[in-house]
Image (tube, rainbow, N blue to C red; front, top):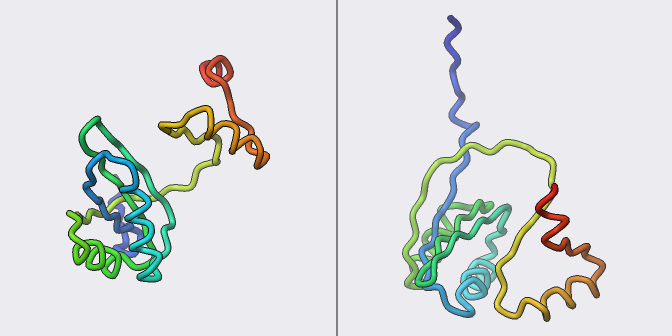
Length: 120
């Protein structure tokens, strides 16, 4: 049996921001990070009807964490493992669905309908 040693630099720090699920909250977080000159490398958002958890990989974890806390947001930090995979699909939940579809299509984005998606 071979013992594998995982080098510490292989771990990635992720911050989690807890948000009320209301219009403008994601925009607020991105504006705060933009003002602090923190770049978002990856994000994922999980939500319920009342709250959401925004998970971020940024170029300066500590600066982002402190800046968001200073702006009254609840922020946590965890280590995650990042792996490279082929980009294939992104799915969004949007309030003005038809307006978003029109905008995306006008920008040349291929929007996939349900029948296509279900057979992928």
